[in-house]
Length: 524
Image 1 (cartoon, rainbow, N blue to C red):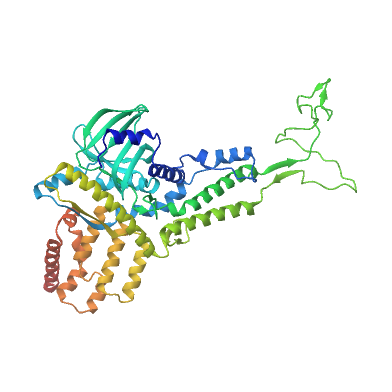
Image 2: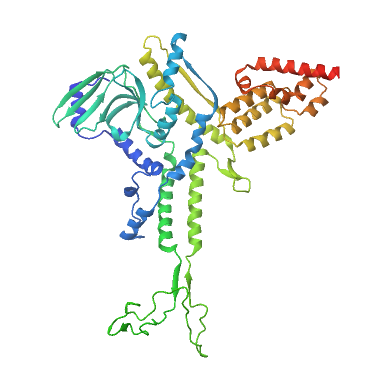
């Protein structure tokens, strides 16, 4: 869409944001309360008929946000950025391909395009679904991706997730930035007319922006966060947690009590020389006790109640109420987690190092695939915008595919699965797959060691059998020697050889090593 002077004036003259922006800001505000804790002071409402004004103020002051629970619930999304496999293809001549790859290694703030998506788009996807990923061009002619918050948008018109035009607010009063498919304007609106201050060319031929979310709101043109389905639960969690915090402050401290003792300075009169006793403030009762003080009790008469040693003590708060509140919060977190991921986690192990595992990994894989789809779309959009900007005549598009081998289970869990499959006589192709999953899980954060382990899996003969098991198979003697001395062979290699040399070369070296061992055995 191309906006002329009269259309820009019409859009600004209404002096109000359009409905899409109003929806976007309302959605962002609520999500940011739960994800980042923004606006907590105004978000919590009075619980009518159950608390007075002072209690409401105290509850707001001492309540904590949902940041921690939202972090736990969304943490599995990180797996889409650590998964293995996938492919990236840029339809460019070979001479320009590497140049473009180098550009994508430093998109903004020194981040690769994949890392930028993880650090900027992912939180925006969750907290600001109707915000924009927008491609900027600086004064040096460099294009790079940015995230534009819904709070910075005055108006836009959408075509699906694409943007027909967008009007941004600026820090200058009554000054707006207008972007359409041909130009980028800086305009001033005085309430009656529009003055164009600056005009810059739009290098793309379209508005280089895309809506963050890919989840449509039914019967509307809007989009929502993947967390939208748990917002009501999050509201309840926030309210219940604030009530628990106030309960702890009001009733969580043990109350000390003791029987009144006479002030020994004024003998209980409250006065000394016609003036209030400074030791008891005129009360006639002892206020403070020293460690060395002795509380003297009269000898009880028959009708007296024996109160020693119960002359003082503590009133402790009722724990069942407190415990019930904690149970309720744990239940709400489990429901929220299960709503997003379709399953729940259980603890493995009985010690303090126990880790959680998913009861059923298939729903998690299905949901992670959806997150991967969303990330792929955004990366493809950014890549294609940059490709057309830097190589307008030769760039033909990209193919971006994230890996789908998500590392969900712990290494111990995967190893147990491998052992059971091996004992059950599973086909080697299945064992290969599980063993690869184990290595990727164990060395998830050590890519060099992972490469070494994967290379060893590929070159070790009879990988799923011990040396004794191989011997019973009665293989060719040289194959048995390869298996028998495989560990000794690995020790002869450097890390660089294991990582960088091809599998075929390493297999040839193993055969040479085994042949030498075999000849030595025969000669002896």
